[in-house]
Amino acid sequence: MLWLRSVLFWAFFVASSAALFFVALAIFLLTFPFDRNGKVLHLFSCGWAQLYFWVNPGWRLRVEGRERLPWNGPAVLVSNHQSLGDILVLFGLFRPFKWVSKASVFKAPFLGWNMYLNRYVGLVRGDKDSIGRMMAACERWLERGVPVLLFPEGTRSPDGNLLPFKDGAFRLALDKGCPLYPIVLTGTADTLPKHGLIFKARANCQVHVLEPVDPRAFADVASLRDHVRQLIAQEKARLESGNVGELQTA
View 1 (cartoon, one colour):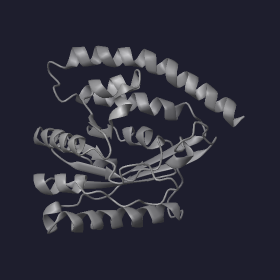
View 2: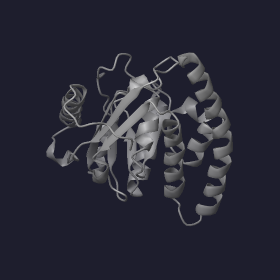
View 3: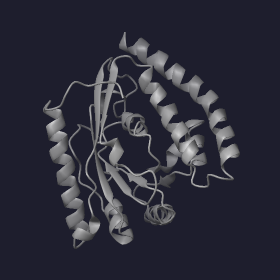
């Protein structure tokens, strides 16, 4: 039955994405003159992404600490990365930010085109020129008072364990002197596993936004990076230990 459920999900995903892209295009055209940072379109995209969570009755989501995230002002958001399902649950934060995502995703019909309309930031992993352009784009958004969200592991973890963190997000926070928000995800590997199209019938996902970290309290990128990684690792272990209340749909 899992394969049938997955086939139905992907069929719904394709059909709904085609329809919702044109809604997104209309929102972009109507709001761009007065919403140059694309906040309205991004919030619509949050709802679009959450739709795929809501149509799976066995998927449950708990979001904690959403209120800590700013509606305005520069901030760097960093999260651990377990699966494509991370995108769905992080959109569930319903707060403005610009994603940093693989450049190839922007070429995907409808979904990628919507990312282009949102002016999210593309990145070719391992390409120094692309990394430089990504950092410059993030700096411009921060200067405009728009948060950016990065996965410091750089790729999805194959087994859920934290990978080493890369420096980019932490360098941005230090250079711009803006708060850095660690975000911890658990359970998302059961939604859309890496290199897989068949997902489990049930997934208990948690998103926890930790208290912001002031980068000015750290002497260099490495110390800030290691401190934030430790915070995420500790909270991830706590959540996975079951030391939380009953999950509810967010």
